[in-house]
Length: 478
Ligand code: NAD
Image: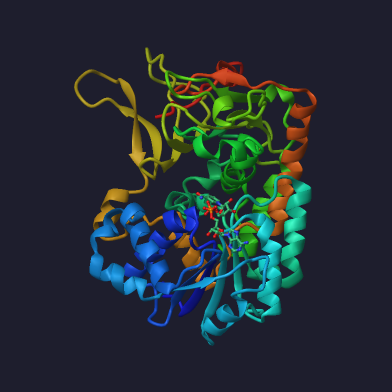
Protein backbone atom coordinates (compact mmCIF):
# COMPACT_ATOMS: atom_id res chain seq x y z
CA UNK A 1 0.00 0.00 0.00
CA UNK A 2 1.54 3.36 -0.99
CA UNK A 3 2.12 6.08 1.58
CA UNK A 4 1.86 9.85 1.42
CA UNK A 5 5.02 11.99 1.41
CA UNK A 6 6.33 12.50 4.93
CA UNK A 7 8.86 14.13 7.21
CA UNK A 8 9.83 11.67 9.91
CA UNK A 9 11.83 13.21 12.74
CA UNK A 10 13.71 10.71 14.89
CA UNK A 11 14.57 12.14 18.28
CA UNK A 12 17.46 9.99 19.43
CA UNK A 13 18.41 9.52 15.77
CA UNK A 14 22.01 8.73 16.72
CA UNK A 15 21.05 6.14 19.34
CA UNK A 16 21.35 2.38 19.32
CA UNK A 17 17.74 1.68 18.34
CA UNK A 18 17.80 4.20 15.49
CA UNK A 19 21.03 2.79 14.03
CA UNK A 20 20.22 -0.87 14.55
CA UNK A 21 16.54 -1.02 13.66
CA UNK A 22 14.81 2.16 12.58
CA UNK A 23 17.11 3.40 9.82
CA UNK A 24 18.02 0.04 8.27
CA UNK A 25 14.27 -0.68 8.27
CA UNK A 26 13.50 2.61 6.58
CA UNK A 27 16.16 1.86 3.98
CA UNK A 28 14.34 -1.37 3.13
CA UNK A 29 11.09 0.59 2.72
CA UNK A 30 12.97 3.01 0.48
CA UNK A 31 14.10 0.07 -1.66
CA UNK A 32 10.51 -1.15 -1.78
CA UNK A 33 9.44 2.21 -3.20
CA UNK A 34 7.65 3.38 -0.07
CA UNK A 35 9.40 6.68 0.33
CA UNK A 36 7.73 9.10 -2.07
CA UNK A 37 10.24 11.57 -3.57
CA UNK A 38 9.78 14.46 -1.16
CA UNK A 39 9.86 12.29 1.96
CA UNK A 40 12.67 12.82 4.41
CA UNK A 41 14.05 11.44 7.62
CA UNK A 42 15.41 13.99 10.05
CA UNK A 43 17.73 12.76 12.75
CA UNK A 44 17.55 14.89 15.89
CA UNK A 45 19.86 14.28 18.81
CA UNK A 46 22.27 15.99 21.10
CA UNK A 47 25.46 15.27 19.14
CA UNK A 48 26.83 18.23 17.31
CA UNK A 49 27.10 17.28 13.65
CA UNK A 50 25.71 18.31 10.27
CA UNK A 51 23.64 16.38 7.74
CA UNK A 52 26.77 15.02 6.04
CA UNK A 53 28.07 13.72 9.35
CA UNK A 54 24.74 12.04 10.02
CA UNK A 55 24.64 10.45 6.56
CA UNK A 56 28.10 9.03 7.25
CA UNK A 57 26.89 7.57 10.54
CA UNK A 58 23.87 5.96 8.88
CA UNK A 59 25.96 4.65 5.98
CA UNK A 60 27.97 2.77 8.60
CA UNK A 61 24.84 1.65 10.43
CA UNK A 62 23.41 0.13 7.23
CA UNK A 63 26.77 -1.57 6.54
CA UNK A 64 26.66 -3.09 10.02
CA UNK A 65 22.98 -3.87 10.52
CA UNK A 66 21.52 -3.68 7.03
CA UNK A 67 21.24 -7.40 6.22
CA UNK A 68 21.18 -8.38 2.56
CA UNK A 69 20.57 -4.80 1.45
CA UNK A 70 23.93 -3.53 2.64
CA UNK A 71 25.62 -4.17 -0.72
CA UNK A 72 23.38 -1.88 -2.73
CA UNK A 73 25.71 1.09 -2.54
CA UNK A 74 24.00 3.21 -5.24
CA UNK A 75 20.69 2.82 -3.51
CA UNK A 76 22.24 3.54 -0.14
CA UNK A 77 23.61 6.83 -1.46
CA UNK A 78 20.21 7.74 -2.93
CA UNK A 79 18.59 6.94 0.41
CA UNK A 80 21.12 9.03 2.33
CA UNK A 81 20.18 12.15 0.32
CA UNK A 82 16.80 11.91 2.08
CA UNK A 83 18.44 12.29 5.46
CA UNK A 84 18.78 15.55 7.38
CA UNK A 85 20.08 16.26 10.84
CA UNK A 86 19.39 18.79 13.55
CA UNK A 87 21.35 19.05 16.78
CA UNK A 88 18.76 19.50 19.46
CA UNK A 89 18.56 19.28 23.20
CA UNK A 90 15.20 18.06 24.38
CA UNK A 91 15.65 19.98 27.64
CA UNK A 92 16.97 23.19 26.10
CA UNK A 93 15.97 25.64 23.41
CA UNK A 94 18.80 25.20 20.93
CA UNK A 95 17.96 23.64 17.57
CA UNK A 96 14.19 23.95 17.71
CA UNK A 97 13.97 26.93 15.38
CA UNK A 98 16.19 25.07 12.90
CA UNK A 99 13.88 22.07 13.06
CA UNK A 100 10.80 24.26 12.58
CA UNK A 101 12.39 25.79 9.52
CA UNK A 102 13.43 22.48 8.06
CA UNK A 103 9.97 20.87 8.19
CA UNK A 104 8.07 20.78 4.91
CA UNK A 105 4.48 21.94 4.59
CA UNK A 106 1.74 19.64 3.32
CA UNK A 107 3.39 16.35 4.16
CA UNK A 108 2.68 13.90 6.96
CA UNK A 109 4.63 14.86 10.06
CA UNK A 110 5.72 12.05 12.34
CA UNK A 111 7.96 12.28 15.40
CA UNK A 112 9.65 9.16 16.73
CA UNK A 113 10.61 9.55 20.40
CA UNK A 114 13.52 7.13 20.46
CA UNK A 115 14.87 8.61 23.67
CA UNK A 116 14.48 7.93 27.38
CA UNK A 117 10.84 8.36 28.54
CA UNK A 118 11.98 11.08 30.95
CA UNK A 119 12.39 13.31 27.87
CA UNK A 120 8.91 12.71 26.40
CA UNK A 121 7.35 15.63 28.28
CA UNK A 122 10.07 18.07 27.26
CA UNK A 123 9.84 16.97 23.62
CA UNK A 124 6.06 17.19 23.50
CA UNK A 125 6.09 20.62 25.07
CA UNK A 126 8.73 22.07 22.73
CA UNK A 127 7.11 20.59 19.64
CA UNK A 128 4.01 22.39 20.73
CA UNK A 129 5.61 25.72 21.68
CA UNK A 130 7.56 25.89 18.43
CA UNK A 131 4.42 24.99 16.49
CA UNK A 132 6.16 22.06 14.82
CA UNK A 133 3.56 19.41 15.66
CA UNK A 134 -0.03 20.42 14.99
CA UNK A 135 -3.19 18.35 15.33
CA UNK A 136 -2.25 16.23 12.30
CA UNK A 137 1.17 15.25 13.62
CA UNK A 138 1.90 11.74 14.86
CA UNK A 139 4.03 10.78 17.81
CA UNK A 140 5.72 7.39 18.14
CA UNK A 141 6.84 6.31 21.60
CA UNK A 142 9.04 3.40 22.59
CA UNK A 143 8.92 1.02 25.48
CA UNK A 144 9.24 1.09 28.40
CA UNK A 145 5.90 2.78 28.85
CA UNK A 146 6.24 3.39 32.57
CA UNK A 147 7.47 1.02 35.24
CA UNK A 148 4.14 0.77 37.06
CA UNK A 149 0.63 2.12 36.86
CA UNK A 150 1.50 5.52 38.33
CA UNK A 151 4.40 6.24 35.99
CA UNK A 152 2.43 5.00 32.96
CA UNK A 153 -0.43 7.29 33.92
CA UNK A 154 1.95 10.21 34.25
CA UNK A 155 3.40 9.51 30.81
CA UNK A 156 -0.08 9.28 29.31
CA UNK A 157 -1.04 12.57 30.96
CA UNK A 158 2.14 14.26 29.79
CA UNK A 159 1.50 13.26 26.19
CA UNK A 160 -2.18 14.10 26.48
CA UNK A 161 -1.34 17.68 27.38
CA UNK A 162 -0.30 18.32 23.81
CA UNK A 163 -1.59 15.43 21.74
CA UNK A 164 -4.85 13.64 21.19
CA UNK A 165 -4.88 9.86 21.73
CA UNK A 166 -5.42 9.44 17.98
CA UNK A 167 -2.00 11.01 17.39
CA UNK A 168 -0.07 8.73 19.75
CA UNK A 169 1.50 5.49 18.51
CA UNK A 170 2.84 3.34 21.37
CA UNK A 171 5.05 0.84 19.66
CA UNK A 172 5.28 -2.82 20.61
CA UNK A 173 7.32 -4.41 17.88
CA UNK A 174 5.83 -7.84 18.62
CA UNK A 175 2.60 -6.60 17.06
CA UNK A 176 4.49 -5.72 13.89
CA UNK A 177 5.60 -9.28 13.30
CA UNK A 178 4.24 -10.90 10.19
CA UNK A 179 3.19 -14.01 12.05
CA UNK A 180 1.29 -12.12 14.72
CA UNK A 181 -0.84 -10.53 12.03
CA UNK A 182 -1.13 -13.85 10.29
CA UNK A 183 -2.47 -15.27 13.53
CA UNK A 184 -5.42 -12.92 13.19
CA UNK A 185 -5.86 -13.82 9.51
CA UNK A 186 -5.85 -17.52 10.36
CA UNK A 187 -8.18 -17.08 13.31
CA UNK A 188 -10.72 -14.75 11.75
CA UNK A 189 -10.34 -15.55 8.05
CA UNK A 190 -11.26 -19.24 8.35
CA UNK A 191 -14.34 -21.08 9.47
CA UNK A 192 -12.12 -23.82 10.81
CA UNK A 193 -10.66 -22.33 13.98
CA UNK A 194 -13.03 -19.95 15.68
CA UNK A 195 -15.72 -22.53 16.59
CA UNK A 196 -13.07 -24.53 18.49
CA UNK A 197 -11.42 -21.49 20.09
CA UNK A 198 -12.79 -21.89 23.61
CA UNK A 199 -12.77 -23.95 26.78
CA UNK A 200 -14.75 -26.81 25.23
CA UNK A 201 -11.90 -27.73 22.90
CA UNK A 202 -8.75 -25.99 24.09
CA UNK A 203 -6.87 -27.66 26.95
CA UNK A 204 -4.40 -24.85 27.55
CA UNK A 205 -2.30 -22.20 25.87
CA UNK A 206 1.45 -21.65 26.19
CA UNK A 207 3.34 -18.52 25.33
CA UNK A 208 7.13 -18.68 25.40
CA UNK A 209 9.58 -15.92 24.57
CA UNK A 210 13.06 -17.35 25.14
CA UNK A 211 16.31 -15.51 24.61
CA UNK A 212 19.88 -16.83 24.62
CA UNK A 213 21.53 -13.54 25.54
CA UNK A 214 22.07 -12.42 29.10
CA UNK A 215 21.53 -8.89 30.35
CA UNK A 216 25.20 -8.13 29.59
CA UNK A 217 25.95 -4.47 29.01
CA UNK A 218 22.60 -3.20 30.23
CA UNK A 219 22.61 -5.17 33.48
CA UNK A 220 22.24 -2.25 35.85
CA UNK A 221 19.31 -0.89 33.82
CA UNK A 222 17.65 -4.30 33.58
CA UNK A 223 18.06 -4.92 37.29
CA UNK A 224 15.51 -2.19 38.02
CA UNK A 225 13.08 -3.83 35.67
CA UNK A 226 13.19 -7.63 35.47
CA UNK A 227 11.42 -10.02 33.11
CA UNK A 228 7.92 -9.13 34.32
CA UNK A 229 8.23 -5.43 33.48
CA UNK A 230 10.56 -5.85 30.53
CA UNK A 231 8.65 -8.60 28.70
CA UNK A 232 5.43 -9.79 30.31
CA UNK A 233 3.59 -6.52 30.91
CA UNK A 234 3.98 -5.54 27.26
CA UNK A 235 4.98 -8.21 24.74
CA UNK A 236 3.57 -11.38 26.30
CA UNK A 237 0.43 -9.56 27.37
CA UNK A 238 -0.15 -8.32 23.83
CA UNK A 239 0.24 -11.82 22.44
CA UNK A 240 -2.11 -13.19 25.06
CA UNK A 241 -4.68 -10.54 24.15
CA UNK A 242 -4.62 -11.39 20.45
CA UNK A 243 -5.07 -15.07 21.21
CA UNK A 244 -7.78 -14.63 23.81
CA UNK A 245 -9.83 -11.67 22.56
CA UNK A 246 -13.32 -11.91 21.15
CA UNK A 247 -13.56 -11.31 17.39
CA UNK A 248 -13.57 -7.55 16.83
CA UNK A 249 -16.36 -6.39 14.54
CA UNK A 250 -13.84 -4.91 12.13
CA UNK A 251 -10.09 -5.10 11.71
CA UNK A 252 -9.50 -1.52 12.79
CA UNK A 253 -7.79 0.24 15.63
CA UNK A 254 -10.43 0.85 18.27
CA UNK A 255 -12.47 -2.29 17.57
CA UNK A 256 -9.36 -4.38 18.11
CA UNK A 257 -8.08 -2.44 21.07
CA UNK A 258 -11.45 -2.55 22.83
CA UNK A 259 -11.35 -6.35 22.65
CA UNK A 260 -7.76 -6.53 23.87
CA UNK A 261 -8.63 -4.29 26.80
CA UNK A 262 -11.47 -6.61 27.83
CA UNK A 263 -9.02 -9.51 28.00
CA UNK A 264 -6.62 -7.62 30.24
CA UNK A 265 -9.47 -6.60 32.50
CA UNK A 266 -10.64 -10.19 32.74
CA UNK A 267 -7.22 -11.50 33.81
CA UNK A 268 -7.39 -12.90 37.32
CA UNK A 269 -4.74 -12.10 39.91
CA UNK A 270 -2.08 -14.82 39.83
CA UNK A 271 -1.57 -16.87 43.00
CA UNK A 272 2.03 -16.77 44.31
CA UNK A 273 2.47 -20.52 43.83
CA UNK A 274 1.63 -20.05 40.15
CA UNK A 275 4.60 -17.74 39.61
CA UNK A 276 8.17 -18.99 39.25
CA UNK A 277 10.94 -16.42 39.05
CA UNK A 278 14.50 -17.31 38.13
CA UNK A 279 18.01 -15.94 37.76
CA UNK A 280 20.73 -17.47 35.60
CA UNK A 281 23.86 -18.85 37.22
CA UNK A 282 27.44 -18.43 36.05
CA UNK A 283 28.73 -20.86 33.43
CA UNK A 284 32.47 -21.24 32.77
CA UNK A 285 33.78 -17.70 32.19
CA UNK A 286 30.29 -16.33 31.66
CA UNK A 287 29.06 -14.23 34.56
CA UNK A 288 25.97 -14.97 36.60
CA UNK A 289 22.96 -12.68 36.48
CA UNK A 290 24.02 -10.97 39.67
CA UNK A 291 27.48 -10.31 38.24
CA UNK A 292 25.96 -8.94 35.02
CA UNK A 293 23.63 -6.76 37.03
CA UNK A 294 26.51 -5.62 39.27
CA UNK A 295 24.25 -6.27 42.21
CA UNK A 296 25.35 -9.21 44.37
CA UNK A 297 22.10 -9.10 46.33
CA UNK A 298 19.74 -8.69 43.40
CA UNK A 299 16.33 -10.34 43.68
CA UNK A 300 15.35 -9.29 40.15
CA UNK A 301 14.17 -12.07 37.83
CA UNK A 302 15.83 -12.80 34.49
CA UNK A 303 13.21 -15.53 33.99
CA UNK A 304 9.57 -15.82 34.84
CA UNK A 305 6.95 -18.49 34.29
CA UNK A 306 3.36 -18.13 35.37
CA UNK A 307 -0.02 -19.72 35.11
CA UNK A 308 -2.81 -17.25 34.39
CA UNK A 309 -6.55 -17.44 34.05
CA UNK A 310 -8.98 -15.29 32.15
CA UNK A 311 -12.28 -15.02 33.92
CA UNK A 312 -14.77 -14.98 31.10
CA UNK A 313 -17.23 -17.30 29.42
CA UNK A 314 -14.87 -18.38 26.64
CA UNK A 315 -11.78 -19.18 28.71
CA UNK A 316 -13.01 -20.21 32.16
CA UNK A 317 -10.89 -23.17 33.27
CA UNK A 318 -8.28 -22.87 30.49
CA UNK A 319 -4.83 -22.06 31.87
CA UNK A 320 -2.54 -19.70 29.98
CA UNK A 321 1.06 -20.55 30.77
CA UNK A 322 3.49 -17.72 30.10
CA UNK A 323 7.25 -18.03 30.17
CA UNK A 324 10.11 -15.74 29.23
CA UNK A 325 13.76 -15.50 30.15
CA UNK A 326 17.35 -14.72 29.32
CA UNK A 327 20.17 -17.22 28.67
CA UNK A 328 17.84 -20.04 27.81
CA UNK A 329 18.47 -22.95 25.49
CA UNK A 330 17.52 -21.24 22.24
CA UNK A 331 16.24 -17.96 20.88
CA UNK A 332 12.73 -19.02 20.31
CA UNK A 333 9.27 -17.52 20.65
CA UNK A 334 6.09 -19.44 20.23
CA UNK A 335 2.43 -19.40 21.08
CA UNK A 336 0.94 -22.88 21.26
CA UNK A 337 -2.77 -23.58 21.40
CA UNK A 338 -2.99 -27.12 22.76
CA UNK A 339 -6.31 -28.81 22.09
CA UNK A 340 -7.92 -31.37 24.36
CA UNK A 341 -7.46 -35.10 23.96
CA UNK A 342 -9.93 -37.00 21.86
CA UNK A 343 -12.82 -38.22 23.94
CA UNK A 344 -12.36 -41.74 22.63
CA UNK A 345 -9.91 -43.45 20.29
CA UNK A 346 -11.25 -46.01 17.81
CA UNK A 347 -7.76 -47.25 16.98
CA UNK A 348 -6.94 -50.37 18.90
CA UNK A 349 -3.45 -50.61 20.34
CA UNK A 350 -2.70 -46.95 19.81
CA UNK A 351 -1.51 -45.89 23.25
CA UNK A 352 0.07 -42.61 22.23
CA UNK A 353 -1.56 -39.33 23.10
CA UNK A 354 -2.45 -37.48 19.94
CA UNK A 355 -3.24 -33.85 20.25
CA UNK A 356 -3.84 -31.07 17.85
CA UNK A 357 -1.51 -28.19 18.55
CA UNK A 358 -1.66 -24.91 16.72
CA UNK A 359 1.80 -23.43 16.89
CA UNK A 360 2.45 -19.79 16.07
CA UNK A 361 6.20 -19.29 15.84
CA UNK A 362 7.57 -15.77 16.05
CA UNK A 363 11.20 -16.80 15.85
CA UNK A 364 13.12 -18.45 14.43
CA UNK A 365 11.38 -19.39 11.17
CA UNK A 366 8.27 -17.29 11.60
CA UNK A 367 5.25 -19.35 10.69
CA UNK A 368 2.10 -21.12 11.79
CA UNK A 369 1.54 -24.83 11.75
CA UNK A 370 -1.05 -27.23 13.05
CA UNK A 371 -0.09 -30.59 14.45
CA UNK A 372 -2.51 -33.15 13.09
CA UNK A 373 -2.68 -36.90 13.37
CA UNK A 374 -2.58 -39.02 10.23
CA UNK A 375 -1.88 -42.60 9.28
CA UNK A 376 1.77 -43.45 9.01
CA UNK A 377 2.32 -44.04 5.30
CA UNK A 378 3.18 -47.60 4.24
CA UNK A 379 1.92 -51.10 4.71
CA UNK A 380 2.50 -51.21 8.50
CA UNK A 381 -1.20 -51.19 9.36
CA UNK A 382 -3.21 -48.46 11.03
CA UNK A 383 -0.39 -46.68 12.85
CA UNK A 384 -0.89 -43.07 13.73
CA UNK A 385 1.67 -40.30 13.58
CA UNK A 386 1.56 -36.60 14.35
CA UNK A 387 2.73 -34.28 11.59
CA UNK A 388 2.77 -30.50 11.23
CA UNK A 389 0.51 -28.97 8.63
CA UNK A 390 2.06 -25.72 7.42
CA UNK A 391 -0.47 -22.91 7.40
CA UNK A 392 1.78 -20.12 6.25
CA UNK A 393 3.45 -21.27 3.07
CA UNK A 394 6.13 -18.73 3.89
CA UNK A 395 8.48 -20.21 1.34
CA UNK A 396 6.00 -20.02 -1.49
CA UNK A 397 5.15 -16.40 -0.63
CA UNK A 398 8.81 -15.56 -0.13
CA UNK A 399 9.64 -16.66 -3.64
CA UNK A 400 7.04 -14.39 -5.11
CA UNK A 401 8.59 -11.41 -3.38
CA UNK A 402 6.53 -11.08 -0.19
CA UNK A 403 9.57 -11.45 1.99
CA UNK A 404 8.99 -11.09 5.69
CA UNK A 405 9.85 -7.52 6.48
CA UNK A 406 10.98 -6.44 9.85
CA UNK A 407 8.43 -5.40 12.42
CA UNK A 408 9.80 -1.89 12.87
CA UNK A 409 9.57 -0.87 9.23
CA UNK A 410 6.04 -2.23 8.95
CA UNK A 411 4.95 -0.30 12.03
CA UNK A 412 6.62 2.94 10.94
CA UNK A 413 4.78 2.75 7.63
CA UNK A 414 1.54 2.24 9.57
CA UNK A 415 2.30 5.47 11.42
CA UNK A 416 2.71 7.33 8.13
CA UNK A 417 -0.58 5.83 6.93
CA UNK A 418 -2.27 6.87 10.17
CA UNK A 419 -3.22 3.30 11.05
CA UNK A 420 -3.19 2.67 14.82
CA UNK A 421 -4.44 -0.92 14.71
CA UNK A 422 -1.12 -2.45 15.76
CA UNK A 423 -0.30 0.10 18.46
CA UNK A 424 -1.28 0.08 22.11
CA UNK A 425 -3.83 2.51 23.39
CA UNK A 426 -3.19 4.36 26.66
CA UNK A 427 -5.93 2.56 28.58
CA UNK A 428 -4.56 -0.84 27.51
CA UNK A 429 -1.14 -0.03 28.87
CA UNK A 430 -2.61 1.19 32.13
CA UNK A 431 -4.83 -1.88 32.48
CA UNK A 432 -1.80 -4.11 31.95
CA UNK A 433 0.07 -2.36 34.74
CA UNK A 434 -3.00 -2.55 36.97
CA UNK A 435 -2.75 -6.34 36.68
CA UNK A 436 1.05 -6.48 36.91
CA UNK A 437 1.67 -4.14 39.86
CA UNK A 438 0.11 -6.25 42.66
CA UNK A 439 2.01 -9.33 41.47
CA UNK A 440 5.32 -7.48 41.70
CA UNK A 441 4.36 -5.88 45.02
CA UNK A 442 3.42 -9.35 46.24
CA UNK A 443 6.79 -10.94 45.62
CA UNK A 444 8.63 -7.89 46.88
CA UNK A 445 6.67 -8.04 50.13
CA UNK A 446 7.40 -11.77 50.44
CA UNK A 447 11.12 -11.18 49.73
CA UNK A 448 10.80 -13.87 47.11
CA UNK A 449 14.21 -15.16 46.08
CA UNK A 450 14.46 -16.13 42.41
CA UNK A 451 15.39 -19.77 41.72
CA UNK A 452 18.75 -20.27 40.06
CA UNK A 453 18.92 -21.88 36.64
CA UNK A 454 21.68 -23.07 34.42
CA UNK A 455 22.43 -20.99 31.33
CA UNK A 456 21.40 -22.91 28.23
CA UNK A 457 18.58 -24.69 30.07
CA UNK A 458 14.81 -24.21 29.90
CA UNK A 459 14.77 -22.27 33.18
CA UNK A 460 14.45 -23.38 36.81
CA UNK A 461 13.15 -26.82 37.70
CA UNK A 462 10.17 -25.23 39.46
CA UNK A 463 8.96 -23.82 36.13
CA UNK A 464 8.80 -27.36 34.74
CA UNK A 465 6.92 -28.43 37.84
CA UNK A 466 4.40 -25.65 37.33
CA UNK A 467 3.11 -27.65 34.39
CA UNK A 468 3.95 -31.16 35.54
CA UNK A 469 1.72 -30.68 38.55
CA UNK A 470 -1.15 -30.12 36.12
CA UNK A 471 -0.22 -33.18 34.04
CA UNK A 472 1.05 -30.98 31.23
CA UNK A 473 4.39 -30.24 29.64
CA UNK A 474 6.06 -27.17 28.22
CA UNK A 475 6.82 -27.24 24.56
CA UNK A 476 10.50 -27.75 23.91
CA UNK A 477 12.53 -24.56 23.48
CA UNK A 478 14.33 -25.11 20.17
P1 NAD B 1 20.63 5.31 23.25
O1 NAD B 1 21.14 5.69 24.62
O2 NAD B 1 21.50 4.47 22.38
O3 NAD B 1 20.33 6.65 22.45
C1 NAD B 1 19.69 7.76 23.03
C2 NAD B 1 19.52 8.85 22.00
O4 NAD B 1 18.86 9.95 22.64
C3 NAD B 1 20.81 9.41 21.41
O5 NAD B 1 20.60 9.70 20.06
C4 NAD B 1 21.01 10.71 22.20
O6 NAD B 1 21.71 11.71 21.46
C5 NAD B 1 19.58 11.13 22.39
N1 NAD B 1 19.43 12.03 23.54
C6 NAD B 1 19.75 11.78 24.83
N2 NAD B 1 19.47 12.88 25.59
C7 NAD B 1 18.96 13.80 24.77
C8 NAD B 1 18.48 15.12 24.93
N3 NAD B 1 18.47 15.73 26.14
N4 NAD B 1 18.01 15.78 23.86
C9 NAD B 1 18.01 15.21 22.63
N5 NAD B 1 18.44 13.95 22.41
C10 NAD B 1 18.93 13.27 23.45
O7 NAD B 1 19.21 4.67 23.48
P2 NAD B 1 18.45 3.60 22.55
O8 NAD B 1 18.92 2.25 22.92
O9 NAD B 1 18.55 4.02 21.13
O10 NAD B 1 16.97 3.72 23.09
C11 NAD B 1 16.09 4.80 22.79
C12 NAD B 1 14.72 4.51 23.39
O11 NAD B 1 14.21 3.34 22.85
C13 NAD B 1 14.75 4.30 24.90
O12 NAD B 1 13.55 4.79 25.44
C14 NAD B 1 14.77 2.79 25.04
O13 NAD B 1 14.19 2.36 26.23
C15 NAD B 1 13.92 2.39 23.86
N6 NAD B 1 14.18 1.05 23.35
C16 NAD B 1 15.40 0.70 22.86
C17 NAD B 1 15.61 -0.57 22.35
C18 NAD B 1 16.94 -1.00 21.78
O14 NAD B 1 17.01 -2.12 21.28
N7 NAD B 1 17.97 -0.19 21.83
C19 NAD B 1 14.57 -1.51 22.35
C20 NAD B 1 13.32 -1.12 22.83
C21 NAD B 1 13.15 0.17 23.32
